[in-house]
Image 1 (spheres, one colour):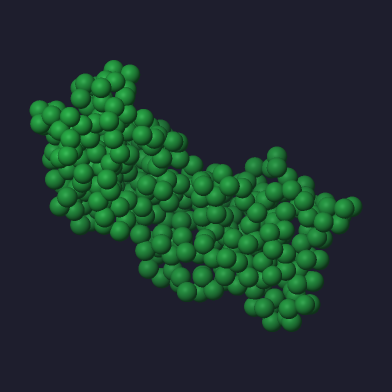
Image 2: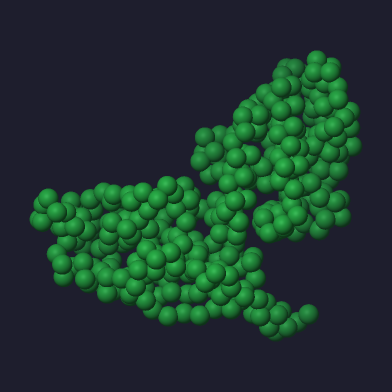
Length: 371
């Protein structure tokens, strides 16, 4: 297929519209439920008080803002996919923002900015101290200011949301690929996201992964849970991986949009696998084993995770049928021998790209971890 044919084919998957709307109109849409900015996203977007104050400064001074991107759902509601922090900052400042529990969140006072130092201590409206409030004229100026809205229509390909989150993530703290996936998952299937969050919070899972504090903040735990399910695929599908990130995203969307995906069975397999690992090795489960020092060392290894977790899950019934003392000893021995296997190490080192590593270590793990 030539370049123009590819352009024409892909363009058919994306349907857009665009126009300017006043902030007052956007607030009205939000209050009536026609605009969903997903308060759950706040755990992934982290603007400082200074960044929020600069936004108000820009609007008051008439400085153009980047476009807001929304995706139109089947019910006509707009999901915000880029511009969430800008809109939530405005709604919070204007006293309209509601959190996940539906409670109005009070905005802190603005800070001094480079061009408007007198913004310090100002609120949208403070009934107890008029001097701390914006004037009526200033409030009207904000309401009448216009924002450019780009609409991705409901006919567009579902994967477009992820691409837009990834490419248009503007301002604030840059999101990790998994944080982007989490935002997409909320818009595609919120109940699936809640279920997925619950899995990642299971104590047996948390007790067996030795991730850093930063990784936890960036929700690497959710990426690992996704890897567990995504890598449970045929050898042929694993060989087709070109980019691991794209593979994980595509698998996530497949699970979330599949009405036949058996969450109960998936949860039992997930919980059962990590219960065995937590019992036998605790947070040593995915650390490197040093045969000379005869102990586990270092931090979390994603190669070990893909090999052990997916391999163990493939033979879960057999392992669960063993008596606990024998099972724990045998599982520790299997993991230790994995680290001693030169062929496995050659295919799982830090210099091996994921699209080359996964098609080898996952089938290898399924064979190695047969009880």
